[in-house]
Structures are given as C-alpha cells and as structure tokens.
Image (cartoon, rainbow, N blue to C red; front, side):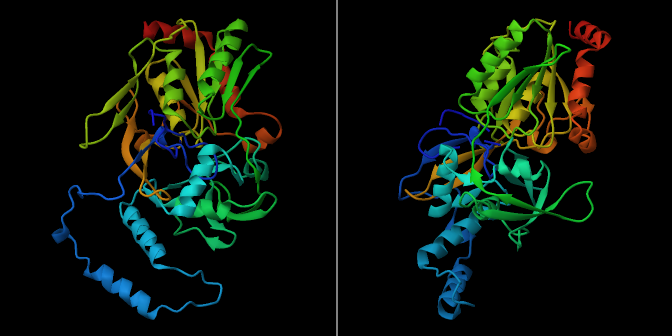
Length: 420
C-alpha cells in the first residue's frame, strides 16, 4: 500500500488504515500498514537453517495430541489438522513477544478485512496490549463503549467473565465483536479507582466520526480530530479555512482519544505548518534497511503570529503522536494534557494464503529529534489531568488550560523571540 500509517491496514495489495474499532488498527501502515503477498510456495527460508532447530519435539507433541486428546465436553469445538497448523503458526508469531505481530487464520483475517472496510458491529473502541495488559486505547466518540463509560487507559481483565490475561489483541476482538443489540460485559481496572469496575456495553453498528470545529466566545478556534482516515486531510483543510475566516490567531487541535490512521494524513496535516522538507517522522527499520524520513510538503501557510495548542491524552496514538510530536519539536505548537499512548511501530500486512494473513512489525516511528514514539510517547509541555468531577459539571480542565496558554500574551511574545 502506499505508505498509509498508523493506531492504524488493509487487505488487498493496497495500503489501508486501521480505523477505530475494536482492535488496535493504528499501527498498520496506514500510518502503519501496508499489504503485500507471497507466492504460495516459498523457495527459500531467509536466514533459517533446519539444523538450528529441533522439530522432533513439535512432531512428538502433534502425534500425542492426535493420539490422546479427548474433548472435555460436547461443546468443545472440533479441531482438524489444518486448525492445528494455524495454531502452530500463531504460536510462531507470538514467540516474537510483539503484541502487533500476529498470524490471522481465515476467520480472524476476514474480521480484519471487515474492519478496514468499516463493515462491523461492535462496541467502538480501540484496544491494544500495553505492558502485558489488554488496554483500551480510546473509545470512539459517541460509540456504545464511550456512552457506557469506558475510558482510555482502562485495563480489561475479563470479557464476559473470561479472563483476558492470556488473550492476544485479536482474540479479545473476536470476543468483543458481536451482533448489534447483544451485550458484552467487561471487568475493568481503572487508575485511581479502587477495585474493579463492571461495565456492560450493548453492541451496535459503529459509525466512525471524523472532525468537528467550534469557536468559543473568547475567540479560541478548536478543531477536534477523531481519526486520520483517507478523507481527513481534506476535512482538515476545510477546518483550517474556517479558522482563517474566523480571523483569530488562537487555535486548539484536539487529538485526545484519537487512535491514529493513515501516515499520509499526518504528513499532509503537518505540512500546513512546516516549510518544505522539514522532517515529520522517520521510519526506522533497525539493521534491516535504511531508514526513511517523511518530510513536509511545505504548504506552510501560517506565520509566527499563530498561537497553537495541541491537546493529547493517553488515548492519542500512532498518527496523532506523529503529528503532535512533529509540531512540538519544530516549535509550532505547545502540547497540553497527558502523555500519549506510545504506539510507534509499523506493521506490514502480508497475504500468506488467499484466506490468511500475517501482520508483522517491520519498523518503528521516530520523531524529528529521534525520539522513539513507542518507548517515550509524546510528553506534554503542560501536564494536566482531566478532572472527572469537573467534567461532569461541564468544565474541561485540559481545555481550559489550553485556552489559558493561548491567552498568555507574554508567553507567546517571549516564545516567538526565542524561536527567531
């Protein structure tokens, strides 16, 4: 796929983005995902040498299972030889200890295609493995998960009473998905809350929001961006036109809860604020091949009188982190909120057979200053937590801090002189 990015993937030989559903799509080369195919028969095995691995234990285990296994109940799913092969390949992928490197058998692969097409029913949230726990990246705005009270950073310990301790992200997605109108129950651990929370969510057809603009009475223009889809660059361009027409110099770009999407979208948006050629993000392949630097297209329509704040939180991931990190390090924007999620790896989606796929991490994203997004995330200039009690009363403490920063004339005058 053309290098789409990122939170963020596709199914044909094209780049797709992992749009916000249940499952961490921001990461594939839509900002994180590309697709390629392999011939049905591989003539070589790269660096693999048969004498370096003992397969006798594999075949011994295979034969014992075939010979001795008895289902514990009549409800135990039947398994055939091909299912065993799929399971073995899944184990091979999981041996790399990377939560984003996953082999998808036919059922999971088809679900993934549905996600990319946007044809799915579920609860509307991104989940990913973080520090060994199944974690909510962000619920989609006005989705069933959002309306039920699930929040970015929530750790899911159980899904319908089944322990999530050993689940992969894809296994969790398979359980969370379901027919519209049916319930799914979550047991959740939330930072700052004692004990666990039990939250019931009713599945629905998920519609993915895109962008919203507003102007406050104190002339602060706000763009709320919910994802980095294929249409986001054009929507963002129109939002910037609204901002210019509003004749104010105070801009808030709200990326809270934005799990990412296409890399190209993040590059295009950054280009409105950066001169041509300025680095936006580096794709680091380690020792596999030379790094690739993605640079601004140089629309650069704003002068130094612009006052810009970007709001982020623990649900800002992938493409959100690329955009926020680039504009912060080039001194275009001030960051307010909380540290971002830290999803800075690149996945490639490879067709193994006509019905199965391998999603494999092939690179990591680095900010213009060389900071690993996965390792560090994006750190705010002003760390501000969202006060839940105040928020219920209609007061957004993070947004209020952003406005306070924008109105500080002395701060911006000193900052602009320093940039000069």
